[in-house]
Length: 437
Ligand code: ZN
Image (cartoon, rainbow, N blue to C red):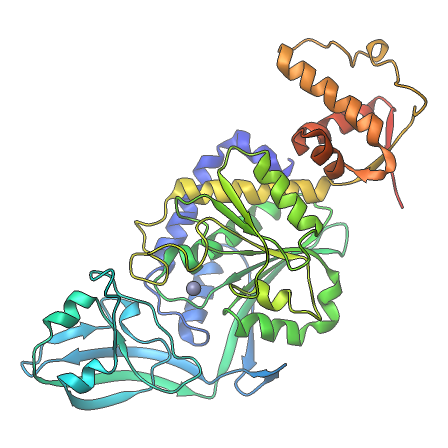
C-alpha cells in the first residue's frame, strides 16, 4: 500500500479515533515537566510504543537549564462561607501553570493581584504560565472576577516545584535510508485542544499508519515540551542533527481554519516546496508565510547554527485566533473532519518526499513514439487522458538528470501524483530509468 492509498479506505474515518484520543488527553494538567506529561505518555503508549526519556533538573542545554519539575495535586480559592469559588479540579486552566505552593488567607485586593482574565472575552478562562519566575496565580473568566465580593479568601495551591526531570518522547521508524524526516509536536499545554493536542493526535496516527509501510526515508517523531524540549533535544543530539533532511512542526491542526504553512528559515528548502506543492494541488484553502523567529519549536530547529529545513504546518496559526490559549480552545473548537484533512495533507507531503526522484529519458533524441507502446490516445475520459499524456511529455522532456519529479510538477503545473504516475508508466515501458547519483 502506498502512503496515499489510504484515501480509498475511508480516510474520513481516521478523524474519529484522533478526536477520541484528544478527548482522553484533554482533562490532564500538563506542563513543561511533571506527571501530567508522564500520564499523557501512558495513554499514548496504548497506541504506539513511544520511548520516553527523563532529563534531570539542572542539566545545561546550550544557554538554558532544565528547570525544576512542577507537579499539581489540587488548587482552590474558598470564600469565608467555605465555598470553592475557584476550583482547579473543574478546569486545569484555572491554575497559573508552574505556580509555587501557597496556603494563606488573603483579602480580595490581594487576591486580585494574582488573578488573570481576558476582558475582551469575558466568559473565557485564559491559559497563562510562569515557568521561569516563581510566583502563584489563578486564571478565571472576567465575569467571575467582576462578581467576586469583598471577603477573606483562603488560597490553597497544593503543588510542588522540586528537582526532578523533564520528560520527552521519541519514536523512530526505520526506512531504507538513514536520512530522516522529523515531525515535532509539543506536549506541554494542559486542557487545550487545537494548540497541543491536535498535533499529538496527528503524530500518533501518522506513526500508526507509516509503521505499516515500506519507506525510503526514516521518520523521527518528537513529543516535547515547547521551547525547552527542542533546545534540550538539540543539545543532546547535536551529532545526529545532520541526518534530518526535512522536518515539520505540527500544531493547531484540528480547527476549521484554512491551512497555514510557515516556511523554514531557508525558505526554499525541499520541504518548503513540497508543502506548497501539496497545498496548491489540494482542494484546501491555504496561506504560506515566510519564516519569522517567533512561534513554535521551528525557532530552535532553524536557529542559525542548525538552520534545519524545518517548517511549521498549522491550520489557524498560533496567536491569531481568539480561542488561542483560552478555555475556548476546547473539544467543540476542533472536529474529526479537520483532523482527517490535516492527516491527509501530511500523507501527501510524505508521499511527495518519498517519491521525489530524478529520472533519465532513455530515448532523448526527439519524442519516443508513444502510440506504438499503447501510451497515446488510451481510452478513458477525454480530460483525464489529455492530462496523463501531457504529464508523460513533461516527464520525458525534463528527465535529463537535472530535474526531479517535484521540479517537473512545479514547471508543468500538474499535480505531483499525476507526474509520478506518468514516470512510473514510462519506467514500465523502458522509456525512463531512475537516475542514481
Ligand atoms: Zn501554545
